[in-house]
Length: 363
Image 1 (cartoon, rainbow, N blue to C red):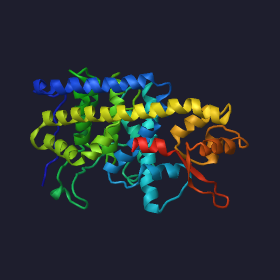
Image 2: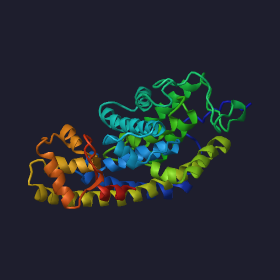
Image 3: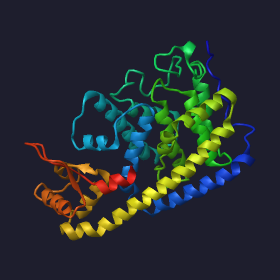
Image 4: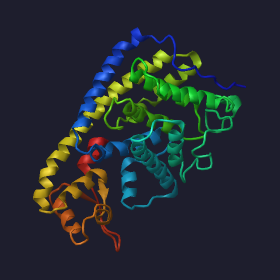
């Protein structure tokens, strides 16, 4: 029977900084370029809402959900799906809620074990895993392997519940140390969290959510909006292989090199997408007021980025646009080709519209 794994104590010793230094420099340069775009935005939470939605979908997809970003946004606009799809979508919505709540909380409180448990409570609310002690660190042994495997046939057995808190206390203390470089540190923090596997479910998603939170905490990004799941999902096999390399042969240098390369590649993708989003927003910032001649043009513009699949009720209820004004505004941008009708009205159900140019940009 495999024995529970005993993680290395942090900080690590004998890292090959000579091997990693070039990657560290490149990753920091790319991340700084992305952060420059973040700092130039008037309201990054609105403009980067499409990237937040994409992160929620892709991080959940790594764990097995099948819903697409289009389906999540259609659900936001009121569309119903079959039960299995609804369950997948709810998991993604919970992840998105955890992201948004973490931003608010991290302004006034440090990264702590209680903070992590709070995020886990949100993640597991009313979804698969809700019966696995949401918001509580495990008090029983877990293991990782093929569906239905036993501990005897598991590919990995995380630390014993009897030593779990010792490892978590070491891990949270390391978060508050000043490592040689925060990007090396965040690579270690993410991997060590996955190795400790402190919850009975949801560890992967919480671990990936910690990446932007830590970078924001260490002031490497001005907003906690650097999402890595796109790269990790595309390279899922290598992602898991590199994590397994740590536990099978202590290959921390290989893992850190992989992670730094992920930051470089994801920064490049984020920069490209962010520039396109900013360009679209800047264009429409002038065009929509001209088309609508309305004091609510800014509300309408922000809504398109926060909720690129919507109906008129969304405009009225969430964006404070009067019931008498909303249809005229929608018709103006529909006639101009900015939005398209996704689903026509049927009986008392109003039409659903979408903003294809934006969604195409983030896919």
